[in-house]
Length: 463
Image (cartoon, rainbow, N blue to C red; front, side, top):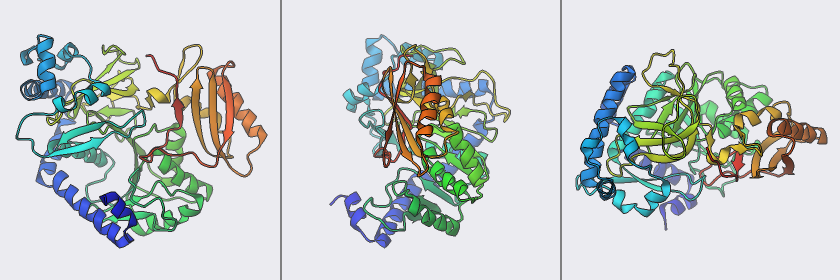
């Protein structure tokens, strides 16, 4: 029997033992002295000037390119075919000499992308969520895990949170079997002081149980997908309740303006959004000024490019192409993500040397493309929904260039007037030639990883 299957059929006290046993393994792998040293280093680097940070990046890049050439068959063959040598890469501007690495290339050359260096005997396997297709398997070395969590906790410190503080998570961890119909809809990690709430049991009748446990646990922070934290926040507001916290952290989905507004009101604190990937090639974090996301340049090198892999100017939307500076087990150099954003020209008042990008609110499948060629962000599409209070949940699906389907889980007092108001508001933004069809459903399913996609476009995006 697989561990997951055994976990699901075990009594709750056995599940808690298994979860804490796994948490202990992660503690020894990710934390301890190496973590503390890396976090201390990253605390200093964030205050470097952009010149100093780029010098640091270039040094790390030269080391990575030399290592990949000597130890990774894919890059050795690629550079030889292109008549390139590690000495041809002096700064990050030289990365353009290499083609982008897409997901299909990783699948096709998976084994040749893994280092042949015998020092790396302990690998960790990660998987993308698969929201844009089939999941992608990636390998990291343990150092990458340490670096990632140091960057993760550095942002927590920006909000006044330190390792060991109580945090409640409501993400995609399937800690509670789907077959379970009665509380507890959570499990407690005593090793890290974390409470894991199920995002798969968020029915209206279950929410009071969630808040009773939260009151008992007394977290300083809640971290989760914007959609799951938003459900908790909506419940509080609609019942005239507040649940003060020090901060809320969100990631993995576009954070919509109405979600931020509601969450901050319900939990009496600011939202700190952040952006990362299972591929561990980019990390961007919102600071206490909430003025966009800081690219963590000590984590990776990030290019914002057009579809051909060439850089676009600041302020123009482009695709994120990223190079991890730390993963030597499976170096991903110029990895082409499915995410798009734009670089900010201005710096942040916080004084950190990390440049700002706009929120990564869109993937290819999250942008509506209009018949006249406009790209419509999900944030724009939230406005027609704001005046309508009789919608419990919704999802927008673009079937083709001229057809939009809006799935709605309606509240008891929803009327035809709400439908007409919504259609009118969407057509105002998308164009009169776009057909908007309303479909009423009992619930809108999450992905297998527990994520919620509010906008799903089936129209290919050409930047």
